[in-house]
Image (cartoon, rainbow, N blue to C red; front, side, top):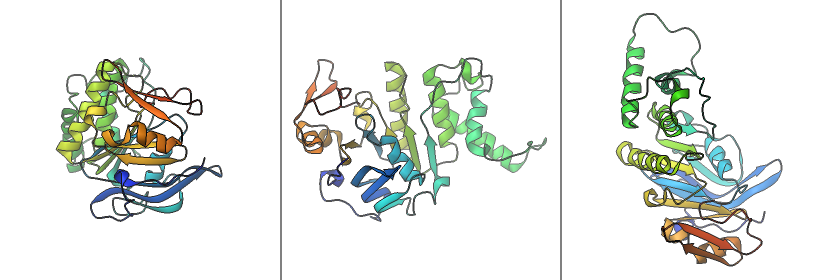
Length: 288
């Protein structure tokens, strides 16, 4: 793919290391298997901001999350995550990867799924008597389950919870260690419309109440549009970043794709992106 200049907030690119940024990329490029996925990408966002990563399939949305985690190296440019190099402060990052729903036969309780976010990396049989650490863990698990509104079903087997209930518990798991940055890879995938709206509102609430910065890959922008602070739109090897009103426009997407793009609004207020034949055929919504 051909790299394109990328602007932060549709203005001058912000250099890495800018004060107050939770994540800052400056003219960054990443490659997978020797192929450039995107180049010249600059973006910056701060604590308490809800940011969505949008774009057609195969443009590197999940790759961006992996680069922020330090799982893929940046081959050009600069990146800072929580004031350090990617990967150095992952203990302060909550991450929810793409997933499939739990099988109905899974008997592990929702509470135990959340607890895995606290000490799932530790080996061995827990001590049979309570300790200060175990009491702190139980208290934090209860606290974060309440934060996501999952008290009513947290003690059920996870396989017997609905898709939206499972997702709330997994978000609680990602939040249990009080991260400063939360990375979510398509958390609304396969959920019904009601659950999508509910989870979107929950994520925004966590941003505001906990001061957590959220970077979320989304397949459809419409369920989350009213909750977002900023959008990162990836296409043709580059990106633009700004508010949804700045980014999801005919002018901005035409610039990014290098071909005429129209952005329409249907009767329900949903955005629809219409492009020429060189725009991927599955890219019908700003959502994709």
